[in-house]
Image (tube, rainbow, N blue to C red; front, side):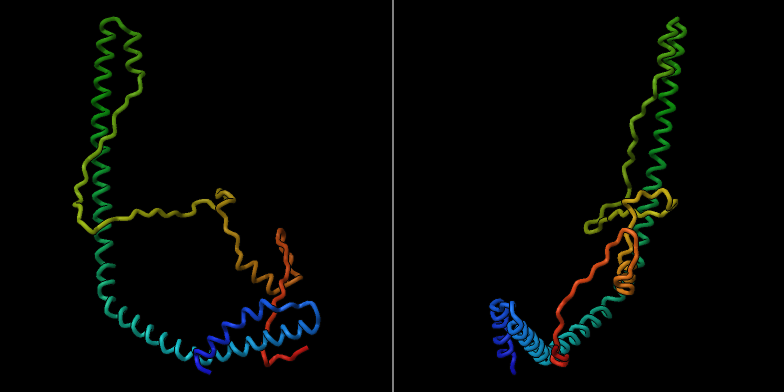
Length: 217
Protein backbone atom coordinates (compact mmCIF):
# COMPACT_ATOMS: atom_id res chain seq x y z
CA UNK A 1 0.00 0.00 0.00
CA UNK A 2 1.45 3.38 -1.00
CA UNK A 3 1.60 6.54 1.11
CA UNK A 4 -1.49 8.10 -0.49
CA UNK A 5 -3.64 5.05 0.18
CA UNK A 6 -2.40 4.82 3.78
CA UNK A 7 -3.22 8.50 4.29
CA UNK A 8 -6.73 8.13 2.87
CA UNK A 9 -7.45 5.08 5.03
CA UNK A 10 -6.09 6.75 8.18
CA UNK A 11 -8.24 9.86 7.61
CA UNK A 12 -11.46 7.82 7.71
CA UNK A 13 -10.70 6.14 11.05
CA UNK A 14 -11.55 9.02 13.46
CA UNK A 15 -15.02 9.36 11.92
CA UNK A 16 -15.62 5.64 12.34
CA UNK A 17 -14.39 5.81 15.94
CA UNK A 18 -16.73 8.72 16.72
CA UNK A 19 -19.66 6.72 15.34
CA UNK A 20 -18.97 3.79 17.66
CA UNK A 21 -21.35 3.08 20.51
CA UNK A 22 -20.23 0.50 23.06
CA UNK A 23 -23.15 -0.57 25.23
CA UNK A 24 -23.47 -4.26 24.31
CA UNK A 25 -21.14 -7.24 24.01
CA UNK A 26 -21.51 -7.22 20.22
CA UNK A 27 -20.64 -3.53 20.04
CA UNK A 28 -17.68 -4.14 22.37
CA UNK A 29 -16.39 -6.86 20.01
CA UNK A 30 -16.88 -4.51 17.03
CA UNK A 31 -14.89 -1.82 18.83
CA UNK A 32 -12.17 -4.35 19.62
CA UNK A 33 -12.04 -5.39 15.96
CA UNK A 34 -11.70 -1.77 14.87
CA UNK A 35 -8.93 -1.25 17.42
CA UNK A 36 -7.08 -4.28 16.09
CA UNK A 37 -7.50 -2.99 12.54
CA UNK A 38 -6.04 0.32 13.65
CA UNK A 39 -3.00 -1.47 15.06
CA UNK A 40 -2.60 -3.33 11.76
CA UNK A 41 -2.80 -0.05 9.83
CA UNK A 42 -0.26 1.50 12.19
CA UNK A 43 2.07 -1.39 11.48
CA UNK A 44 1.75 -0.76 7.73
CA UNK A 45 2.42 2.94 8.30
CA UNK A 46 5.55 2.11 10.32
CA UNK A 47 6.81 -0.27 7.63
CA UNK A 48 6.25 2.37 4.96
CA UNK A 49 7.56 5.49 6.71
CA UNK A 50 10.22 4.18 9.11
CA UNK A 51 12.82 3.60 6.34
CA UNK A 52 12.16 7.15 5.05
CA UNK A 53 12.46 8.57 8.56
CA UNK A 54 15.65 6.61 9.22
CA UNK A 55 17.22 7.86 6.01
CA UNK A 56 16.31 11.46 6.86
CA UNK A 57 17.52 11.00 10.43
CA UNK A 58 20.85 9.54 9.33
CA UNK A 59 21.35 12.42 6.89
CA UNK A 60 20.51 14.95 9.60
CA UNK A 61 22.80 13.20 12.09
CA UNK A 62 25.67 13.29 9.60
CA UNK A 63 25.08 16.98 8.82
CA UNK A 64 25.04 17.84 12.54
CA UNK A 65 28.26 15.88 13.07
CA UNK A 66 29.98 17.73 10.21
CA UNK A 67 28.78 21.06 11.56
CA UNK A 68 30.07 20.28 15.05
CA UNK A 69 33.43 19.26 13.60
CA UNK A 70 33.83 22.62 11.84
CA UNK A 71 32.57 24.59 14.86
CA UNK A 72 34.72 22.78 17.44
CA UNK A 73 37.84 25.02 17.15
CA UNK A 74 35.69 28.15 17.46
CA UNK A 75 33.87 26.81 20.52
CA UNK A 76 37.22 25.92 22.08
CA UNK A 77 38.52 29.44 21.41
CA UNK A 78 35.41 30.95 23.01
CA UNK A 79 35.90 28.70 26.02
CA UNK A 80 39.43 30.09 26.42
CA UNK A 81 38.66 33.78 25.80
CA UNK A 82 35.45 34.26 27.79
CA UNK A 83 36.86 33.35 31.24
CA UNK A 84 39.80 35.69 30.65
CA UNK A 85 37.47 38.57 29.87
CA UNK A 86 35.20 37.69 32.81
CA UNK A 87 38.22 37.59 35.16
CA UNK A 88 39.30 41.03 33.92
CA UNK A 89 35.81 42.46 34.53
CA UNK A 90 35.70 40.92 38.01
CA UNK A 91 39.11 42.40 38.87
CA UNK A 92 38.13 45.84 37.58
CA UNK A 93 34.93 45.69 39.63
CA UNK A 94 36.97 44.77 42.70
CA UNK A 95 39.33 47.70 42.11
CA UNK A 96 36.35 50.02 41.56
CA UNK A 97 34.66 48.93 44.80
CA UNK A 98 37.91 49.28 46.75
CA UNK A 99 38.45 52.82 45.40
CA UNK A 100 34.86 53.78 46.20
CA UNK A 101 35.28 52.48 49.74
CA UNK A 102 38.59 54.36 50.11
CA UNK A 103 37.08 57.64 48.92
CA UNK A 104 34.01 57.14 51.09
CA UNK A 105 36.21 56.56 54.14
CA UNK A 106 38.08 59.79 53.37
CA UNK A 107 34.82 61.70 52.96
CA UNK A 108 33.46 60.25 56.21
CA UNK A 109 36.66 61.18 58.07
CA UNK A 110 36.47 64.73 56.72
CA UNK A 111 32.83 65.00 57.76
CA UNK A 112 33.64 63.68 61.24
CA UNK A 113 36.53 66.13 61.60
CA UNK A 114 34.22 68.97 60.50
CA UNK A 115 31.63 67.94 63.08
CA UNK A 116 34.25 67.78 65.83
CA UNK A 117 35.58 71.21 64.93
CA UNK A 118 32.02 72.58 64.85
CA UNK A 119 31.20 70.98 68.20
CA UNK A 120 34.43 72.33 69.75
CA UNK A 121 33.56 75.81 68.48
CA UNK A 122 30.08 75.55 69.97
CA UNK A 123 31.51 74.34 73.29
CA UNK A 124 34.04 77.18 73.32
CA UNK A 125 31.14 79.60 72.95
CA UNK A 126 29.36 77.96 75.89
CA UNK A 127 26.77 76.21 73.73
CA UNK A 128 27.26 72.81 75.32
CA UNK A 129 23.87 71.36 74.39
CA UNK A 130 24.41 72.33 70.75
CA UNK A 131 27.89 70.81 70.87
CA UNK A 132 26.46 67.59 72.31
CA UNK A 133 23.81 67.49 69.57
CA UNK A 134 26.42 67.96 66.86
CA UNK A 135 28.57 65.12 68.21
CA UNK A 136 25.65 62.71 68.68
CA UNK A 137 24.15 63.36 65.24
CA UNK A 138 24.67 60.45 62.86
CA UNK A 139 27.27 61.10 60.19
CA UNK A 140 25.93 60.64 56.69
CA UNK A 141 28.17 60.48 53.65
CA UNK A 142 26.67 60.13 50.19
CA UNK A 143 27.75 57.02 48.25
CA UNK A 144 30.85 57.54 46.16
CA UNK A 145 30.64 56.30 42.58
CA UNK A 146 33.83 55.79 40.59
CA UNK A 147 33.47 55.61 36.81
CA UNK A 148 34.28 52.22 35.40
CA UNK A 149 37.30 51.91 33.16
CA UNK A 150 36.25 48.79 31.27
CA UNK A 151 35.70 49.70 27.60
CA UNK A 152 32.28 49.22 26.04
CA UNK A 153 32.65 47.05 22.96
CA UNK A 154 29.69 46.81 20.61
CA UNK A 155 28.36 43.27 20.47
CA UNK A 156 29.87 42.25 23.81
CA UNK A 157 27.64 42.03 26.86
CA UNK A 158 27.78 40.39 30.25
CA UNK A 159 25.13 38.39 32.07
CA UNK A 160 25.32 38.22 35.83
CA UNK A 161 24.21 34.92 37.34
CA UNK A 162 23.81 34.08 41.01
CA UNK A 163 24.44 30.71 42.59
CA UNK A 164 24.26 29.26 46.09
CA UNK A 165 25.60 26.62 48.43
CA UNK A 166 23.90 24.88 51.34
CA UNK A 167 25.49 25.83 54.66
CA UNK A 168 22.85 24.45 57.07
CA UNK A 169 20.27 22.00 55.72
CA UNK A 170 18.22 22.10 58.93
CA UNK A 171 17.44 25.82 58.50
CA UNK A 172 16.05 25.61 54.95
CA UNK A 173 12.26 26.33 54.93
CA UNK A 174 9.98 23.47 53.90
CA UNK A 175 8.76 25.27 50.76
CA UNK A 176 12.24 24.88 49.26
CA UNK A 177 12.27 21.10 49.61
CA UNK A 178 11.78 18.99 46.48
CA UNK A 179 9.66 15.84 46.61
CA UNK A 180 11.48 12.82 45.16
CA UNK A 181 8.71 11.83 42.73
CA UNK A 182 10.99 9.45 40.82
CA UNK A 183 11.70 7.44 43.96
CA UNK A 184 8.02 7.35 44.96
CA UNK A 185 7.00 6.23 41.46
CA UNK A 186 9.59 3.45 41.59
CA UNK A 187 8.23 2.18 44.92
CA UNK A 188 4.61 2.32 43.67
CA UNK A 189 5.46 0.45 40.46
CA UNK A 190 7.29 -2.19 42.46
CA UNK A 191 4.91 -2.58 45.42
CA UNK A 192 1.64 -1.69 43.63
CA UNK A 193 -1.30 -1.97 46.06
CA UNK A 194 1.02 -2.97 48.93
CA UNK A 195 2.72 0.44 48.86
CA UNK A 196 2.75 2.09 52.28
CA UNK A 197 4.11 5.63 52.13
CA UNK A 198 2.57 8.06 54.67
CA UNK A 199 0.75 10.89 52.91
CA UNK A 200 0.57 9.05 49.58
CA UNK A 201 -2.59 7.47 48.11
CA UNK A 202 -1.87 4.69 45.62
CA UNK A 203 -4.30 3.92 42.80
CA UNK A 204 -4.31 2.17 39.43
CA UNK A 205 -5.60 3.16 35.99
CA UNK A 206 -6.55 0.58 33.39
CA UNK A 207 -5.79 1.23 29.72
CA UNK A 208 -6.64 -0.80 26.64
CA UNK A 209 -3.84 -2.43 24.67
CA UNK A 210 -4.32 -4.01 21.26
CA UNK A 211 -2.31 -6.31 19.03
CA UNK A 212 -3.16 -8.95 16.42
CA UNK A 213 -0.79 -11.44 18.08
CA UNK A 214 -2.73 -11.36 21.36
CA UNK A 215 -5.41 -13.89 22.24
CA UNK A 216 -8.97 -12.68 22.12
CA UNK A 217 -11.12 -13.35 25.14
